[in-house]
Image (spheres, rainbow, N blue to C red):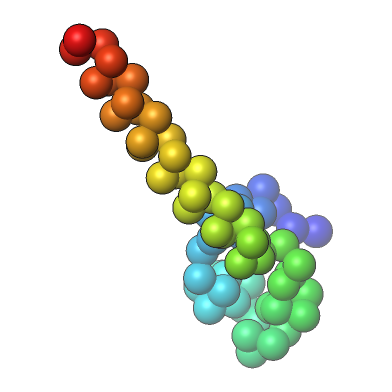
Length: 68
């Protein structure tokens, strides 16, 4: 069973090689074959980046409206 700290590592997009070492797997293939489905895909990462850009832009816009 995967522990909560390990699942958090996947959610935090920790490097797969670091997770491999923590699990004591001999190869990255073993880690990815077992847990690869838990890593965010490119679409998830892209969505997060775009959401962050919009959040910053909206915060700046709100700050500018408050100073008027």
